[in-house]
Image (cartoon, rainbow, N blue to C red; front, top):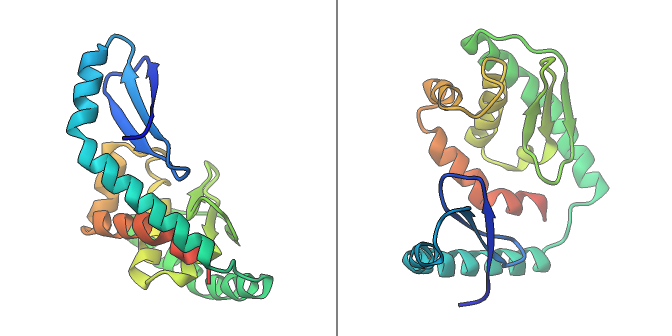
Length: 182
C-alpha cells in the first residue's frame, strides 16, 4: 500500500479519505495510539484499494473528455433559468418557506447554495443530470431555509420531502464529475 498521511487533531473519531490526487489521509484523535490507527487502516485496506481504483478511473475518464464550450454553458444556463424557478416555487410551497433571488452560474465544486438572506444559487451543470437529481438539489437548498446546517434535523426535513434522498445524493457524488465534461 502507498504512503498514508496522518493528521492528528482534537477530534473524537478516526476517518480515512482518498483524495482526487490519490493521497490517503487518515485523520485521528490526538491521543489515539499508533497501534490503534494501524489496526483501523488494516481493517479498511479493501475500502482504500477500491477508493484508489475508483479515483484513478475517474481521473482517466476526465483526462479523455473535452471541457464544455462557452456555448454549451450558455445553453445550460438558459435551460436552467426555464426549469429551476418552477421547481423552486413548487417545493418552497410544500416546505412552507420563502426565498429571494435565484442565480444560475457555472460552478466547479457546488451544485447549489442558499444564503442567510434566502438567495438560492444553482449550478447550470445540473441541467445535465436526471430530473430527480435536480429535484434533490432544489429540495436540499430550500431545506436550508429552515435549517442552515447539515444536522440530523436538516436531513430529516430533506427525507420528509424525498424519502429516497440518500440514493439521489449518492448518484450525484458518483456521477457529478461526468456532468462537467462532454
